[in-house]
Amino acid sequence: MSINDSIKQIMARSLEAQQLTKAVFGKVTGLEPLEVAVEQRFTLPAELLVVPEHLRELAVELGGERFVLRRGLELGDRLVLLRSEGGSPYVALGRVEA
Image 1 (cartoon, helix red, strand yellow):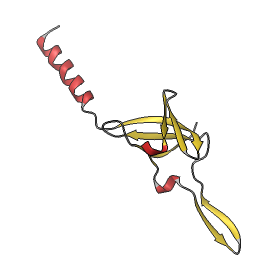
Image 2 (tube, one colour; image 1 turned 135 degrees about the vertical axis):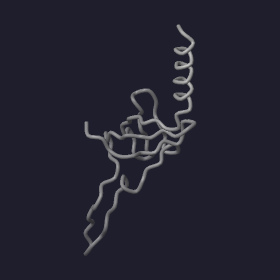
Image 3 (tube, helix red, strand yellow; image 1 turned 180 degrees about the horizontal axis):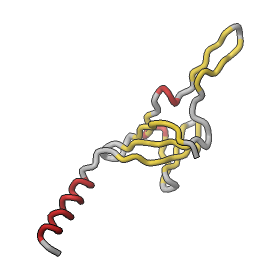
Image 4 (cartoon, one colour; image 1 turned 180 degrees about the vertical axis):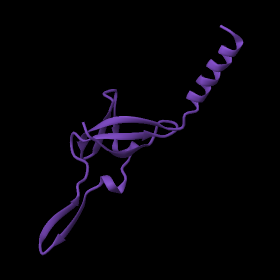
């Protein structure tokens, strides 16, 4: 291996190690409390998850009747998650169609 190849390999490893975020996929396995199984390797508890407003239920009550304007997370929902530097917390970016 030439010195140029060695330098390229070292630089590639260095950049990979400095990666600040990484996208991973998960599946909602619990709601109360929220739990997400990540790529069938480990489960994230609610304390390590950041769920933005667009993934939370929005409902209104009109005339004694409840209307759901935006559904929240449900069991089995597949999510794309962004892992921040250091591994926690994970930010749920959105749902993914299976």
